[in-house]
Length: 573
Image (tube, rainbow, N blue to C red; front, side):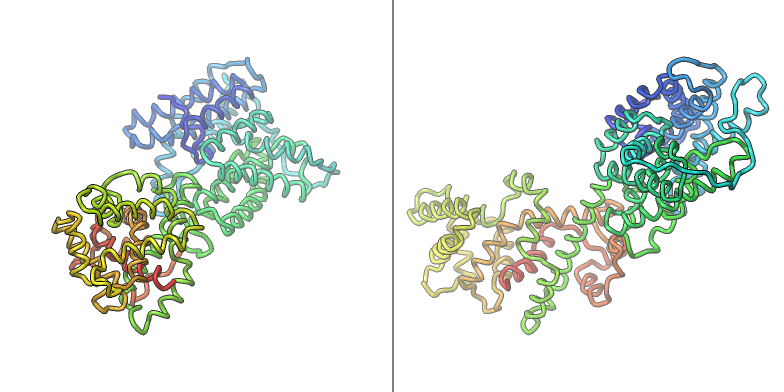
């Protein structure tokens, strides 16, 4: 019924260790308030179980974070006591309204689902406001208004200047004030808790709080309120939401700053509007500002939206966009490869340079998979398997020489000072296969060489013949030294290219059926904020699909297509 996952969900984090830091911060602020928060989490989760709501929501803490805030708010507004002053009516009220907040969460989720937007902390605000307004008619509940009800006053007051120390303290407290804690240590613990899950979110939380405090200071708000973080917590939530629902970039940070500034003005407006009722604005300014900027997802090309169903952390969002972008570049190279033969080769080269592809680009994009790719027998390249077969055969002096040659190649290939030496070693291998010393290798010679090292599997030989055709850039039926050298370079990168393409397909294949249709491809482009696929490229992609316009994720097809594109890239560069 209780876990450490719900409370970090207020800041869109899903990490138990983050929850531990936040809960510790609440106990530093007030053990009594923290206990009421825990009671409320139990009640909120109980509502999810008894009502039979989606269990995945329960495991992610989505029924607990609003309930947690309800318990904290009711205990905080009831009494200023830190560790004493427990009241059974407040505890019972926390249970009832925490339960109700879970119901509101599901209801508002259904209302907002067409807009692919969550209800944020609206259930907390509605539940707590209803309780505070109802207290006026409860004679057995001894609870004073949170604010003294009075009509708004528009008289100006003298405002003292704000020091840098007070500004920084207010920015840190603003992060903690999300959980109704004005202790600077509590604010620091909350910030550390967010950082455990996402450094970008922690940066956004502090930046948003600082923006809110700065705007409040510029318009002349009360210095004490700024120093206590009262103008930072709503802006902190808004900025964090912007960098969560939009992929972190200069555009999303700019939108986040604008939204955070607007949040402060919404807060000032709500404070004035709710003053006659004597109730606080809580996190309503954040909800209104965030909803306005997140409902418009998909209508702006300035930023890349993150689908609610695939939301994790900002770091992961950046990773996925980078992976998807590189995947598109590789796929474009494959489906366009036939258009850049012969007279179009120069155009192809310019296009590849413009998109910064090549070995350096691919190595950078796939570095995260480098460790896993080189681990298994099945993941080694065709070139490496050939060398291994040469090593196993000790009967032939030529094969032993070739084996020693391969060892020298591997020992030299990672040292940039060995470029010329490496080429010389490849040339010796080329000469070994070119038995007739014609300075070119025929398909028959290539196949004979493979059989001589016991590569007699028909499937493997068929792949080798396709590889030979890819090596033959000139279409002469033979491969020269430069073509052979280019292919050997590519073969070392092939496992990583294959791994990257599979990751790309896995991301685009949203229904996990092992294939990608054109609509999924266009959806992935839309995710990146790109226009629909041009008609020419659409036709080329359809040409390699089956009759249902579905592209099967066969590794052999993928490897062949990508190697063709990458082969030409290596050679032309």
